[in-house]
Length: 597
Image 1: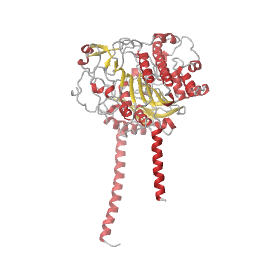
Image 2: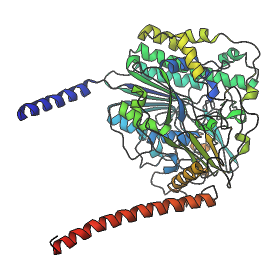
Image 3: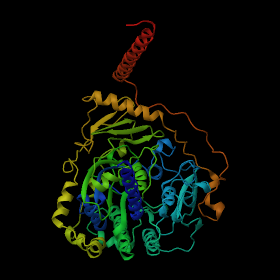
Image 4: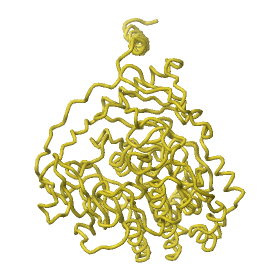
């Protein structure tokens, strides 16, 4: 019987190993938009800017309604590639300047490195923005087999040049590369150029290895030259229904981004690998609004580079043909992609990260693992935000100009638009899904999902805001019931305030302070034939030593001190009781050795 059981066990192990080897690893196409607003995709309910290809992926996949990023590009991208909160890496707060000697520490192993070990071919098309001052920061030295794109925060959409000020001087030069070589003879709109390269990589991909293609678009970020909004010319006429001139140009950028998604889906189908491809579409943070790109985060409050939901709750959808389409209200953070994608690729993610493996949540709709998330710590500007369950706390002195409800003035229309159903059904992604995978859209379900994706309070955006945090008092919101952050609960929920502020204080002390943003005149592209590139030797010591952790941006209140005392006294009491109990048992054993009871 025992020998039979051992034989059965060995047979079972052999079968499991064979099955695991036979499972085909999914291709991964990760598409990231730049500064795309919550209200700038039509599956969230607005007909002003149509995004039918992105919408089809959303309706056929999973909409992540509570997907959080950091509030700027570099922190979000560093979190994605490492699975760690940016404040642990020194990449929090303001994004890396083109003249700044900084990047993701080389002690960190990035997502593409792990995927390469799992047999993937890894390609980055588009924006990098997590370090280029030293050669060891560059993408082909951090796990990507190939790189085609730009290294800093933005470039001109037609000349691929970046203009930046350093110590009062204007630096300018080319910022477009193939691997480590600048591209001098390129023509075309940036979105279309990047799309063409992504499509080419798909078409030329060999079937012997799974594909990890990371497409990091510039759109709809403002241009990095002296011209901010530069859509393809042919997209401008398509937006004639939009009254606001700048918003119309912005819509053209979003439209070109959506068409890019359609072309990538079509290329995957043409290559006959769509049926085993995981597609992720996200934005790196919310829109920058009227001051920069004229995107809209309505009905959410605030703009990019603030701790409000408009900056950190971003557009996110996931698609695979085996996923049942639905709206997910699970809290999902950008750090979660690191372990989630490694698990999807058949690997075992590290447990020494902040990201949580949410693959089962996506694939099987299992109970979400995440209940809290550090939304942002910004030690340069002096604020922080943390969410636990339904509640979100914000502390610090937040800029009022970027903290209101921005976007109402951009919504005016000159005339009606085409019916949403028509635009959706005629989109490239819709036709591809129907013809190659037999996945037609159910229009009744589409409208049901679209209505369900509207946030509570969307139809009644407040005229005035009720809370601006300061160093004396923060803001507390129930963002499940109040995603618009309209009703401050700071004084009404002091027990929650005490607990969450203490938790946020603790996280603040774990921070690696962000170095002061300081430009290096050696970065001047004029010294390298007007090309932006690495200028610091790898072995040169960092310009600025590590700073001490700055004070937490909220005064300690009497209630909070009392809460800390109560916790410590309770902990001390529990430990004392355990000690007495253990001492008593030990004492009885000692006495028992001396006397016969």
